Length: 170
Image (tube, rainbow, N blue to C red; front, side):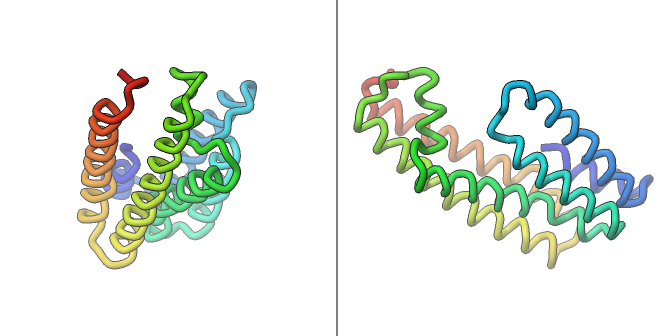
């Protein structure tokens, strides 16, 4: 969440390759922490580390600005793949609280997964556009604040719909 602001403020004091190196270390720590439990995010973390390698090699601010768009693309791949290879990501999360999720709950979670796919398409497109065509200030504002506010609105909106429509969720 703080990545855009770290890039914005970090570039005033550090070369882009140093910021990418710090991100790579953080991703490696996260990967090591999730390794023992074979967490689903491990391939995503490896892709993030590969991206960091490219950013270190290029040492360009523009390369650092692609990170939010790449994360959205990876999340889109993960969520959309789960639609073709059930259970969906949202169903897996729902089954943590409701192991015996009824069929209508499975349909609902599939729809929510589809909505998240749409969100990742829109948000990733805006993240890419801000990386390519806006100032670093606008990029930081969108990717560090506005995108998270939109995500929060989607989370709260989905929660309110779930409470109203899903009797087992009460």
